[in-house]
Amino acid sequence: MRFGLIGYTGHWTTYAPVLKAMPDAVLAGVAPATEEETVGGFDHAPGHGAETRRFDTPEALLAAGGLDW
Image 1 (tube, rainbow, N blue to C red):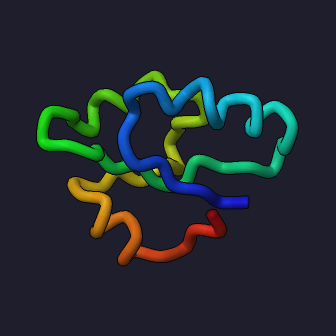
Image 2 (image 1 turned 30 degrees about the vertical axis):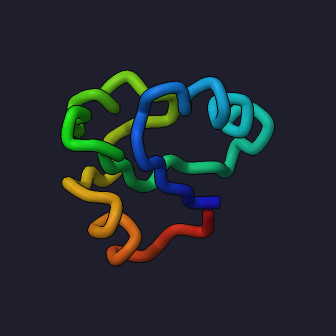
């Protein structure tokens, strides 16, 4: 399952257990939710890795496709 993350404030505790329960889950893309957030804020997000694409806006993340959830 490939999923995207919009915003990083308080989200990590919500999806981190999914990564443990579903080894095939991949954080495929991230985007800041507000102008105050930056893509650098995702650097230490659970599941963030070399395959994780960074987008400047949630709209760009969703328009890119390739997400299951």
